[in-house]
Structures are given as C-alpha cells and as structure tokens.
Image 1: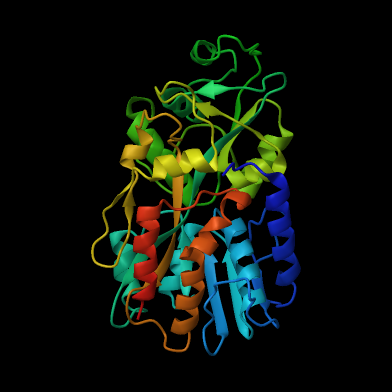
Image 2: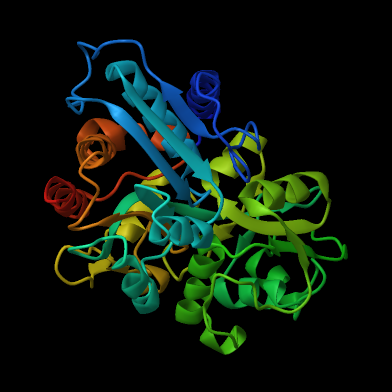
Length: 383
C-alpha cells in the first residue's frame, strides 16, 4: 500500500485528538504531529463494534504507558479504535522518548513502554524489580522508514548515499553544491547554500537507529558508535521528531531526520537513498517493509529483539535501508494481575492483522508476516 496519503494520516490523527480530550491526564512531552501537548487516552462508552475483531478485556481497566514519539501517530489511531470497540477501558500513552519510557516502565509507573530500540542488558536487569517473576522483553510492533527530510529551494528530487549523509550530519560536507552531492545529482541545479542540519536534542531511538545505519553502511564516514544521544559535530538541535521536522519545514537549506509520518503531515520533501540497487530508493511503507523483512530475530526466550544489519547494507531493489522498528516493552511474566488482561487485549489488537493494516495510512510500515506471527504469539504468552 502506498504510504504517503495525507488525508488518511490527518483523519486518523484528528480522530485521536478528539477522543483524547475525554480523559484529563498529564501529557507532558507528547510529540503528536498535530498537537504537541496531547496524549493518547480516553474512556470509551461504546460497545464492541460489529465490524471489528478486537477482543476486549473482560473487566476493562486503565493502562498508563509512555515512550517513543516515533510511534505516536500509530498509537493515536490504535487507542481511538480500541476505545470505540471496548467499553470501560482507559488507555493513555504519553509520547516522551524511548529512554524516558523505559525509565517509567522500570520504575513501575507504566504497564508497557514504547522504545525505538530493544532493551539494553542493564535495562533488562532493571526490569526485574518490576517483573517480579520474569523480565522485560522487547516486542516489535511498528515498522517504518526514517525519512531524511530536506528544504532546498529549486530542488525537488534529491538523491544521497550513506557516506554523503554521514558527512553532512557530521559537518564534513557544508554546502549543497559539494562535489559529492553533485555526483549523485548530475541533473539538479544545486545552489551554494550552506547546509543547515538538524538533529534531536533529546535522547532518541530515532537517533540510535539512524546512527546504526551509518555504522553499518558508512563506517568510514561516521567515526562514532551508535547511540540515542547525538554525537556528530556541528548542526543544530531540536526537541523530538516534531521539533526537527518543524525546523526543516521552516529553514531553507536544511536537512533533518524523522519518521516518515512527520514528513507526510508537514509536506516535507524526502531524500531518495542510493543503495547500489538499480534505482535510488524512496522512503515509503512498502519499501520499508522490504527492508525490515531482512531483519533477524536475535532475542532469546520470549524476547523478539531484531538485528537490522542486513537492511542497512541491502542492495535489493525497492528496499529502503534506513528503517526503524519500535518495540513495546512488557514483562514476559510477573505483570500486574489487575492490568494484564488489558495489556494482552490492547497489544493483541495492535499486533493483529486489523491493527497492522492501519499503519500505512498513518505513515508507517506493517510488520512483515513472519515477524508479525511471532509477535502475536509473544503477546498471547504474557503472564
């Protein structure tokens, strides 16, 4: 399914904002494309829809969750649909950052957390005080491309490759008419405009995934380890994906990175990536799914952490290499008895064919079938 359908994104986001007003909960740090102060949450009064396959938790209840802003628009749509189908349930997802979400989860504040990267060993250790008889696990849920958005007057079709991108974001390439950019865009009229690169000021899984791509596909041009905190030289920072997108939208000569949903919502032009395939690859849902399909599950037990290394260096046609998978962090065992049924019900919906089917309209990519099947089994086994 073609990804860039703005009307679908706006309809989903507007509907989600409408229901979020029904429940007044703290929503600091939300990164919704349409309202930076809103979070996903409501109390549904409608019964289960006859057209929906959602299996509601018997006793409803309330869930608090927080974390990745990358999945905010998907979460908005899922919460809206779930609330309409399940009477008596309340769900609030606060978009902050992956790091903050994991901290909240390990402090026992949240029933689950969203993260753009799987749990680190020390974070898994920290989860054991919350998951009394188990441990925190990483469950892939939302796929999508990290778009490289740009704003350059007179240039509507821009191609870059991994080494050139890495050098741009490390301030080693500083003008748009640099010979490396010209070589990739021989027919473009590139101005001598100074490049103004924007990166995340907060610790971000989006940054971590972009720099994993640089480590995999442009190691000689990116001398830093991948990390949630930005390490490149120069550039300007902005808060959350919405802040980076807002700067790119406003500043001529700018370039930045964010989930495709932010580019779609703000009508920001995106870079095509020269991977060595027969043609440069555009950031779309279908192309991102083709990249994610090459991932390998490297988690043990119930954990489904993915190794995206093959995606970063792929030369397959129509496989976009700068991909991100957001995870839901939950206890494999030892979940709170009062919230476990609702956690399994809600995450069961998000992982279902019905839940995954809405992702393309919201600027994301559905999980490949093989991974989605494993995710559904992992959610069903939560205890």
